[in-house]
Amino acid sequence: MAATIAHDRTVLERFPAGAPRSSWPAEEYTAAQRAQGTDAHVVMDLGSDPFLVITNTTH
Image 1: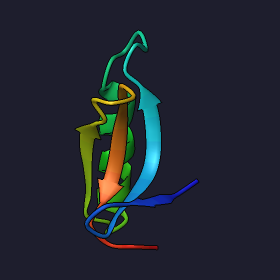
Image 2: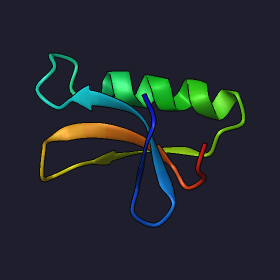
Image 3: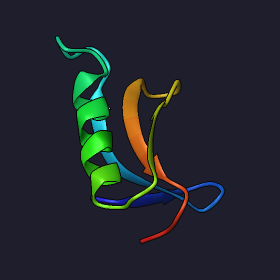
Image 4: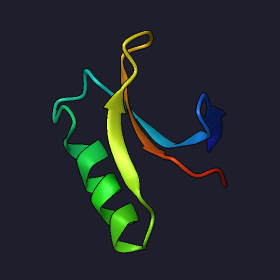
C-alpha cells in the first residue's frame, strides 16, 4: 500500500528493521523497482524503525 509523505515522496513498501536479513529485502525490492523504471531508494524511518522503499514521485 503506497502512502504519500513529505516532499512528494511515495512509500512503495515497508520492511521491518529487526528482520533476520536486515535491509536485504528492502534492497532487493528496490532493485526490482529500478529494473521496472521506478527511481526507488531505501531509507530508514528513525521514528518508527522500518526500512522504507521510497520514490520522489507520487503514484
